[in-house]
Length: 287
Image (cartoon, rainbow, N blue to C red; front, side, top):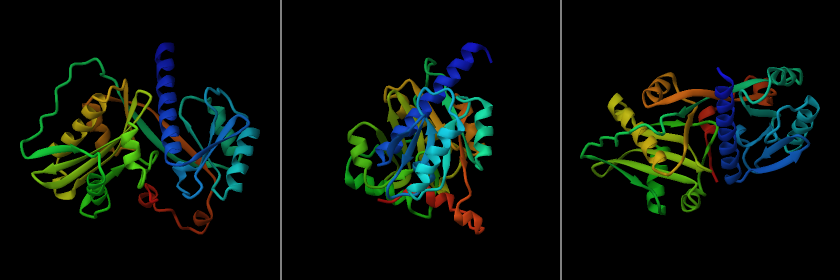
C-alpha cells in the first residue's frame, strides 16, 4: 500500500471506531478517562461490546502501564479485563504488550467499507409483492422485535454493536438509527437496522424468515440496506462481523475489506470452568 492508501485506511478505521464508541455511549455506557486510555463501562449489562478498555482518541501509542490501570478500573467495576481497538492504528508491539499482561485474542471482527460512493447506482429492483416499511412508531417497532426474537427467522447481527430494546424510537427520532420491516404482501418476512453517526452508516443487523433464505432475497435485503444508508446522506457505509458468504455478497455490491476490530481479554471465571458464553445471547441487550 502507498502512503496515501495507508493514511486513508487509518482514517476509515478511526471513523469506524468513533461510530461504534458513540453507539455504545448512546446505549447507556459511560466513558471514563484513565490516563491515556478510556474505560467504556455499562452499569447494568456485562456485554463484552459495552465493557472494555481502549486507547484514547488520536493516541498513537499507549504504554502497558496505562493499559494495566484501565484494566484494573474495569475489574473494580466487576467486569472482565478486556481491551478493544481498531487494527492498524497501533504498532504490532502494542499487541505484544497486551499478551505480556496476560491477555489473549478474544475476537477479530472484520470490517468492510463501501467504496463506490461516486459510482452510478441502480435503485434495487423490488418485486410487486414486496415492500420495505420504515419503522417510526411503537406498533412498527413491536413488529420489528417480533421478527428479531422469533425462531422462524434467521438473524444476522453485528457483535460490535449490540441491539438495544427500549431506546429504539428515541434513536429513530434523533436520526441515529433506521429500522425497516420487509413485508411480502401483509406478512413480515424480514427486518434490518442501520445506525448513523457523523456521516457514517453501519449496516448493523438483518433478519429474514428461514423459508426465504434464498440468494435473490438475500441480495435484495442487502441492496436495500445499502441504498437506504446512502440515501441518508452519509459519505461512508460499513458493515461488520460477516460470514464468508456475506463477505462475497458485499464485495459484489462494492464493499472492500478495510481492517478489523480486535479484542484482547483475560479469561473469565466461566471460561476457566470450561463454560463458554453464548455469543447469540450477547448480541441483544434487554432493558
